[in-house]
Length: 296
Image 1 (cartoon, helix red, strand yellow):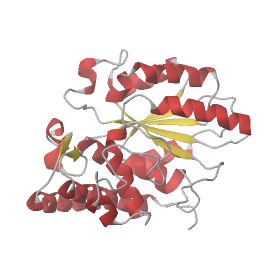
Image 2: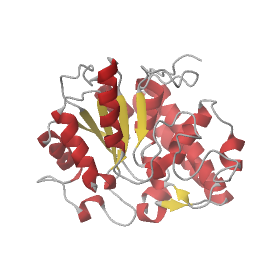
Image 3: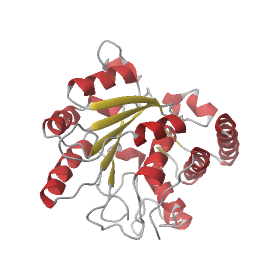
Image 4: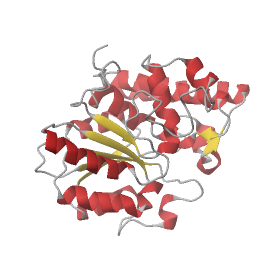
């Protein structure tokens, strides 16, 4: 298999529809899984995996590969559905053996059992620290490849993140690209309720905090594929002499399914019966078609 790359904005939007539907079906088969966060992060994840990662499912041990780390590991189902979509696993392996002794998939991604997972995560605030270590190793080996780190907005309150953010900028680790799913809602409170980011608050305030620590920072509409595409395309080349980059994606928890996005706290975790699954699938299709009309 060659490296996966979808070029056009309409085709990327269609792929987000496919992945959202897969997450919905997962919620029917896996009771109590994390649901709202994976739905908000679909677009950033599709942008990474299907265009900018250069992902090759048949060459996962290439030392010069780009990497992606899911720092908000409780959203593992999002990456699992992508791997199934790419043909790396079957629906039966995901749904039929989820969280079983003889299965590979569980609530948090395990690099020892799941092809494609670079780092086992779950406890929040560790992804960027792994990226810092990987960056040092690659510099020593003369490898210029990127490490994307997908984080949640609530997770940004972890102090370990800010240690890594300061360190990465101080050591010119411009191979690191942090992508924040800023869906404005943690498990039980609004993101700005517990910790306000700077004077502006919200995604823009978080961007200012990154800039103060020496990063390139961009804020984009996380449900606008064309806008995200432009942001990812503008990331500077890896030189180990510049600044790391963060793309803060202003998203909607439960995006694509209105009964979820209208009540985001209620859908941090959850499951669907057959009736709700069909309703959610229809809403995702409607949402995807509406987005396609905006760009075609």
